[in-house]
Image (cartoon, rainbow, N blue to C red; front, side):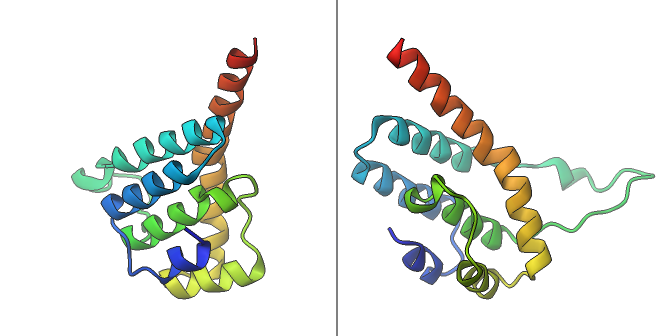
Length: 136
């Protein structure tokens, strides 16, 4: 699935995102990428952060979260096969993502900075470790 087709989807839920990633895994021929993408599917399926259900604690600055549909769209872009090896959106991709998600450029840049650190880098590390074990 191309980034344009992912962006043309209405706000996706985790189920739709999971189905999209599952289809992409089926088309992928590289075993290490398949494994990495399967990890992405697990991450999306089990990403039920309920930390904010109790409300903000005293003394902590409240934070605004991005809409769930925007996060799903951004995760789909980040974890898509054509962007997984280089998870840095071009200026054109940034414009499309801002239009699709309704967030501004600063929010988009912050999300990608955090996502590369929290999602992409650990997945890449697991993929490299799996590759070393398989080669050794």
